[in-house]
Image 1: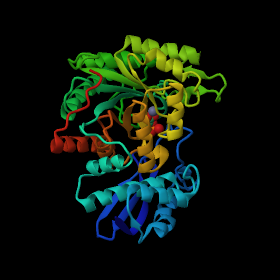
Image 2: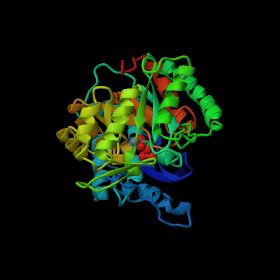
Image 3: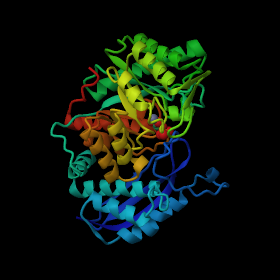
Image 4: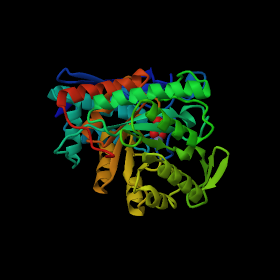
Length: 432
Ligand code: PGA
Ligand code: ZN
């Protein structure tokens, strides 16, 4: 049982220089903790709603002063002095006070910042590392991990789409250090490939190592296939074996270049090719056939439910079929995907749903279906590192944080290194 003595919020800036929210939570025991929340750019339509000020004269309407004020105002007024038994109780109280279906009134950004700051404060009060406290929160929601592991790294090498000015439609090509047995080895392998890729970007495209929103390289690829070819070339140039040492993952983020409506025909503008859903599946299946790809995220649009089952059927022998915008860390959407056999892996982003407890329910639903789970950051991040603790504590199979540049990304990798040093837990075996 913990009692909140004081809560406050402030507007800070994320890695894109856009406002986001930081919460500070002081418990009656005197323990203080803070937490900052991230923000996406290629957001799913079913995500919980951040509260933005809308004042066009300030940060083009993206200010978070109202969200921050809600933390010290209405949220604090409802939580202060109460005996709070559990994370679930705290999160449910905030959901009740907000009283909308998508947290738009108080703001999912405000609510999540409090949810995490409270968890961190309670972990300190209990004097346990945050990853263990996260693990306890999850086991109270009915999921336990008797054999703890560290997540397999999936690290952004090349960026396109909304994170890189759209020079190529697909959003990320990621490296999966498959043969690495530790986080430490995995990072060293990925940095070697990244540097080889930077040399390729310079010699082939004349582009210095300038980076996109998540720190990936973003040369002017003629098409998605070139992005994948260059990734394989970079792995080889680093003296590693494509597939065996370093495999690839792709976030197609296709909702960003698709048009259509639920139940209607969808069209995909993949560069100069305009494809229907079946042709899009064939293109992605071709990539999975030709390149050592072990994970494909959002190959179809978020409401193209009719075609996801065929996608899954076609590629799941080789790659996991990961839903991001499709699922939005939402139990109802996960249940629908399970029923339709539309995917077999969840990309979990806590801010898509807005509280730890609801994200834990999404995690539980995915696990109950036998799915894999990738715990993910957002393209707009902060220097806060709680995501690393979450990925470990919840036993995520993979972690997706962005590239090996930019300190908001490195904060999470460096925290994973610390946790690895502290625990010596093994990294999840995957895909080998
Ligand atoms: P976002 O992108 O954070 O900009 O939504 C990340 C992703 O699509 O995985
Ligand atoms: Zn995505």
